[in-house]
Image 1 (cartoon, rainbow, N blue to C red):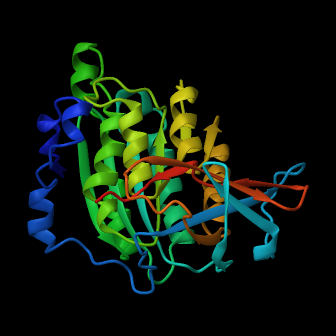
Image 2 (image 1 turned 135 degrees about the vertical axis):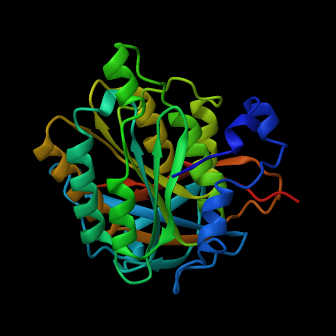
Length: 319
């Protein structure tokens, strides 16, 4: 288990915008060689091509809709309609996935069930060409497994998760350590997923209660948006649903409230289905300015019975 060394460098969001952080998890990289290369077959995106991963659902039943065509969608950027230049409904497009597990004291009663459900989830969802990393977070964030397609390594990493300070709290009756939820999301995106191409997603098991992060939720959202990462959250325990929904809604993901172990399995099934049922839509922005500004995206269906889900925007490249 390797502690992140960069958290001590996080001295406010303003500084983070201009300061390059030292590489994270150096001993993990040294032990396993250089960071894993992008999976074969992943899309390499041109800087002026905007790629969107879109989920389509029936407005009434909320079931995922497959078999749609390019003409069933329209895209706008900052209220200006865009021309779709690429479209795909491939379910086997490789994905780079980060599994983040909250190991703060608030998850003590459910961690065992989370471990088993997460292992089954990865066994079902991962296919050839996919890569996954495992991170636990409490008062610090730990990289338990760097990107790999080895399910055995991932299972071992998941089983190594432990509730932070459990022995201390049990012996002294003290308060469990805090939870650097926002820091963990930021670091997973900027120090790991930023180096990857193609489809990227975080699946997070947490109550979304943050206690001790040096960063704000806005910084975590921006990090996900800048790295084109979709965030999915399975909310467990006494939850902060507002924070969870901000992270997922702004990045094109889903928040699912889990109320029992049975619901946990169902929630993982829903995320698995969504990850394998997305449409890929690409367009060249009509706004050619390389100004680094945030641009709002809206994807709609020309079919009245369909709702769409994708990220709310992206940051333009900057010279």
